[in-house]
Amino acid sequence: MKVSQIKVAEWFLRIALSAGFLSASADRFGMWPKGISAWGNWQSFVDYTKSLIPFVPDTLVPFLAYAATGLEIAFGILLLTSFRSCWVAKASSALLLLFAVSMAVSNSIKAPLDYSVFTGAAAAFSLSILVGNRQQIK
Image (cartoon, rainbow, N blue to C red; front, side, top):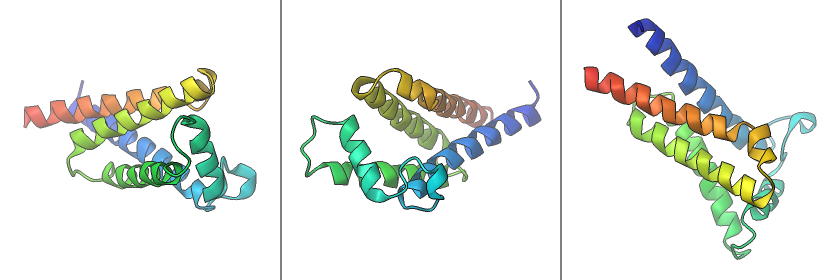
């Protein structure tokens, strides 16, 4: 495979993953029109978070919702930079895999499949491999 093809694949993965993280975060803060929003506001997202982790005390749910959103925003921005790219991609993959498993256990396997969360986790993991291999070649 040509180096140029690898770079295109890497940037396609970076942009797609970043857009997914940042779009979902923007939705939670009401930045998308209501007609196309998944949550539309912060409280709806906190309620959804609670549905994914019903075993967690109610007092911790907002913190976990903020933590997830903070990580998604950070990863969304960092994926577009060259800062610790391999680590950021692996952490993104782990976060998405955690979301997918939580959705599958709390709702059904259909939820993470319909929203392509496993696909996103695999894409982030693939990005970590591309970036890691590129760093080893240098």
